[in-house]
Image (cartoon, rainbow, N blue to C red; front, side, top):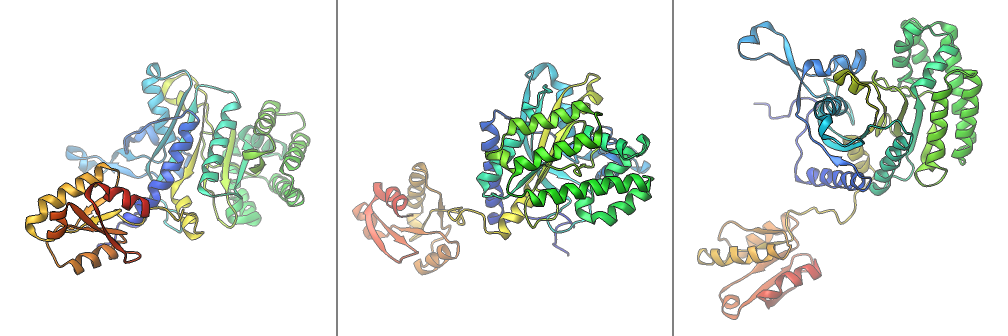
Length: 450
């Protein structure tokens, strides 16, 4: 029987889980410092909840669940695995609006599923780490979200990341200025979103295939690449670069879309030139393919990595699709899987991250000593140590070998002599040193030397 997990899915062994828990812990700690509250939603949603929210390509990647029981013969789907955490959040806000605060700030770390083609750093089941703010149109929301995401990356050891920023309204104005008909704006955005993946020629071909006039496509691509060239020139001065891009956009838009341009200017000003703001880069080519974005959009990039570590934006209309009333909303999602891959490849995990299941292993000298061994283990646990008990009475050498194979740094031995004297032999497997200590001092000795 094939024992491999399903394609695009993974098993996580203990060392993997410890790394995942470390990263998730950092993310949750930072988000809580910004006042965000935890939320969880079901893995399965009604299919109508998800369809039509992600654009043409996104809808094709939804894992649908066929009807069961009497409806199984129809071959129809009525449920689906959640595709992201944003649409379920919108449903929750619509369902529980009266119970939620005026400004609802939540973070959510749960798995999502996409029927995508698996590749390096991309899986069919993966965790998203979302943080969203509901109820305000203020650009303070965007600035806080970007700052929180930047703080997470800094805590994890990323120091050369880039927060790419654009605006859907500005993109729309650029498409208008390039002569792209309004009815193919959505098609054009899907193509532009692939610029960093397929390059200039690939996007040009796709724009043509999607009905965008050649002249308009050429105007857009020329503008994008002139901005990219300017970024190379101003690499050491991000504030000057962002100011330059705003000027270029103003010239291209010619007075149209002033509100969208003003929002971009305000986000840049609120972020400032230092701290997280030093990582902010305006990127007029950033499109993000999801159809529900209405305002500012952003992605997180790191050097030498195809794709992003996360992204998000403002989606003021999405909750209204469930509720009937327009509710302002903005969020950003971090890709846990890609973060873990990059950190692993670059050796970014802290050296003191636990690699052992326990701080100490309690040996069992003989069957009569089992109750005392369990009491010793319970006492050490009560003092904050992680304790494993060897489950069988065996030769001491075998027990020490087992503890060493598990990278457990200490073992305790209570033989007849130790029991009679009220002491415990503590052996350091790293140095080979051992000493007899009073039973009440064992935890302190291990904690001091571990």
